[in-house]
Amino acid sequence: MYPYLNLGFAHIGTFGLLLWLAAVCGTIALHRNFVRNGVDADALNVVTMVVLAGIIGAKLWHELENVNELEAAWRQILLPGWHHPTDVLLGFLHWFQAGFAWFGGLLAGVAMLMFQGYAAKPNALRGHRAALRMLDLAAPAAAIGYGVGRIGCLTSGDGDYGINTTLPWGVHMAKNALVPPNPPTALVQPTPIYEFLFALALAWWLWKRGSKPRPLGFLTGEYLVLSGIGRFLVEFVRLNPRIYWGMSNAQVAALGSILFGAAMMFITRNNEAIPVTPLPKPSKGVIAAA
Image (cartoon, rainbow, N blue to C red; front, side, top):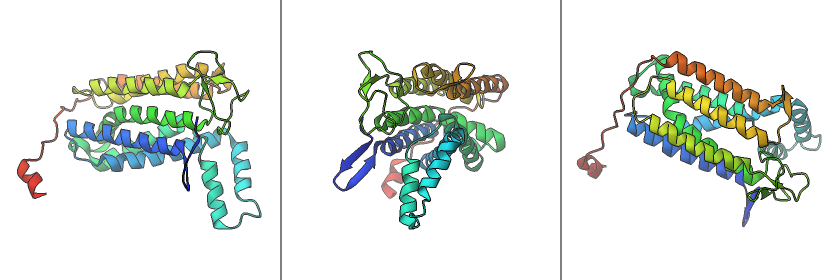
């Protein structure tokens, strides 16, 4: 695995690079869904705001789960000899490059998407109907972005890999992985790759389901249920400690996602369905004038 890429004078973290790629893939998927559904909105702006909210939410959730680590990190960043703003900034960036919780990112991302729906008014909808419409439209993009981002977790070796294994597809983590395995030479299960493949399948399913009119909010419920199932299952071969009733914290959060998604599907099953009406293609005359 390669936590960093050294390209001349540039020292690039692979997690950040894959996060950028995840945003690009999500933007393309969302834009195509906007066009397919006749929504005149800026997919790049939507994804940018959601990614920023998701990163902050995931980091905050992780730190709230590990308060002792948070206190230690900030004591190090604000050491007496670190008064220079550049030192503080570098210390902050080092602290921010690892340690993110999936559930916190999901909550913050959903909240931002709902806000974007209120603002963009997709298909001329308003209020909570606009928010639900935006969530439905973004579901395939969210699945793709999550899957690609997980590859960044694997390349950086930030602890999202699985338990030690003798399986032929086990992987070695680099000696400079952010969270080295124990022992350092052990093969581990590439759980981010499992999640990546599951996310692609989920994105395909949601894309196909979205090709026909569905009740407002129903696809979002499907996303929450299916993504929760995927996250719950992968935790059986992950390193996370078992905290609640033999389950990891992520599994408890995944169960919450499944239950909330199922409730959402039940509540929204009779909502109005918005017709799939693509945006009109610009005429040749308009293209030439541009």
